[in-house]
Length: 289
Image (cartoon, rainbow, N blue to C red; front, side, top):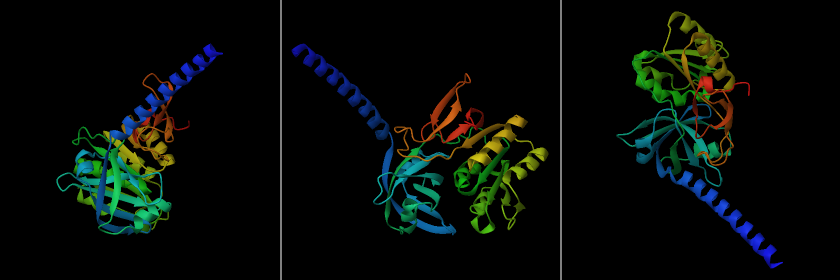
């Protein structure tokens, strides 16, 4: 019996060591990211249920790049809320977030006032990584998928055409901001109340027929992203897409936000949107997976 007990103790010890190593590895993941207490400098409702917030966040702003996101701790909620970075000013140390109220967490954020502080972790994820702003670029955004495109489009200036779509005119956001970048802006609405009556993909097809481009960036609902990716593949244009998935940890520790992708060898794998993305090469994504 003593030998059996020693064996059991040994196995329990090994299992505990494995667990502790795994826990330590996950803690290392969390320790890599910066947490700041960020005062709200301004908050504006720019469309029904959509808020534009500027935070003082010098550490995160210094590290941020276009297409990344942050995790905001909402009062009385355990899990942070992932919010895309709309813009940043590294010199002023400010961070701009544009978000839509979709639940209790973002509702709490929308009710916060200037001077209050958000606990923010970031910047998180892989962004758009603009390499050559002299290229001709097209940006395609739908709804609340528009804000993550703003900073990357700024880098391209007049070399970028921005095609954005919304449900209706009153829901349109950031159109003037893109114009201030020097971007050429085209607008579509589902109900025809502003711009083109129809889908952004219809505008994209027409634009590419007349104006070939070097790269396409897209962010929005998955059906829109798939349609943009199909159009890019048909024309042989490199395309980057920012995927939308529900997230929990935001740093690759929990495996909640996976999407099916392809390896360079063509094998299926599940990538973590928060860590491996949210921006992916459109050819890597298995759209019907």
